[in-house]
Image (cartoon, rainbow over the protein chains, first blue to last red):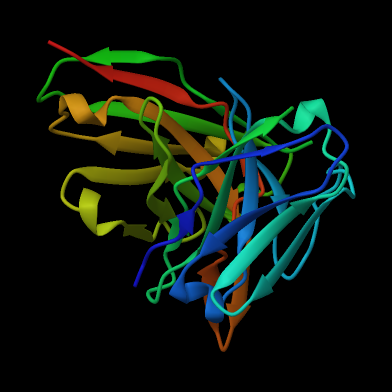
Length: 107
Length: 127
């Protein structure tokens, strides 16, 4: 299957830990990357590879994977983390694939 | 610093074509692949295809084959995406996004994640 599935919405209390998940067959073989997108802005890469953060991304963001599920964990969520989050991997042809996105609300 | 600067918003009629540009700076243009991703209003991200600025080679998502053309001008470090036979459901923000290149066994490939994105170009298709 060439699909990545995400929960449409997740909420977290300020300062607590939240996990956003992404499921898909391709994740058994390839790492997921994660993007944060705030309203009216372009996506920003927050996690890539096994668990790599681009320069400037806070260390409260981390990535992990098990079987067909990849996870983005935010440890100590901040108000500025409220955004849409998209996972991304590749299909069997090597072409990029995106999940449907998860809207994170910080309460 | 790496920057991808896209052309401005466009309004087109159904059946017309649109060409969006993406000017790169702060890195070696031919050293990375350039992808195009679109996002319809209130919807998720949709991959359209890539161009290898070094060779001019392209790879398009099946959905857009026959309607999309990706080109580049290395003299001005600019990539282009042209979409033809526009329909109302092509209304979206179109992004260019850079991907690393990796080479193995004499061939080079694009990574499937994107480290820098343009600011987006809104294309509205309306009669």
